[in-house]
Image (cartoon, rainbow, N blue to C red; front, side, top):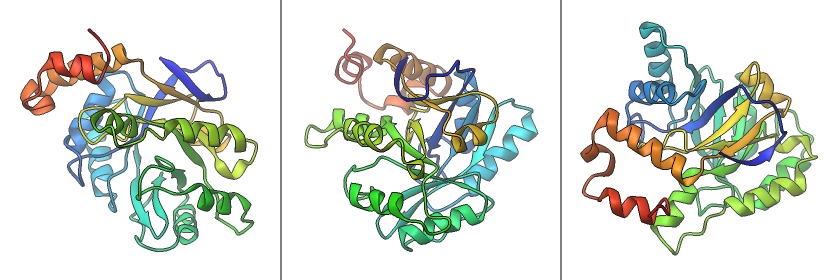
Length: 261
């Protein structure tokens, strides 16, 4: 595993804090997502479907019903007038298409945490100007609790299409420059998994996850290509080759997306 950013800690737990399911535009059901996450050794998973918390609640109920050990974080990815925001530890949905400041306040009013996902990536993401606006704000509830310095979905999109830029490097540079400003939050790495890529970028922590994020005691970690390849093989084992990779060949995937010959 490659440590990207964050506080060097003796990590005992890992979480994927940005996963999509069939509840919005993902391929795995909420139940499949949590079972897969537990099978690869994660301690926690945040189901963050677009504009709804119902899939996350379904995943939480499944874990309780089946007696699984993984922690499910109820989350959502919501569109604001300035770009997307992920809310974690929520009690209910968040209104969409309101201002960024209003969205951050709404999440915090529920006792939730706010994450800036895939910064600077295309039109759905927050710009550096708006993020700086938030860091400068002194208004109550207007701040980030976490900042995605590594989003595996961004990396995957850039590999699929040469015209799409991998903005993870820009996010890491930005965070390194502003990390002393507590309003930027903890370093977060997430898969942003829409397919069968849960766990390809993860956040390390000790103790209680929410406390670790609030105290900015996290470690953003990206899996190496051979480790991501092993995740893909695990997904094929659980869900079948046709469902996971469709008409693509394993040999093509191995070389093009993972750089393994």
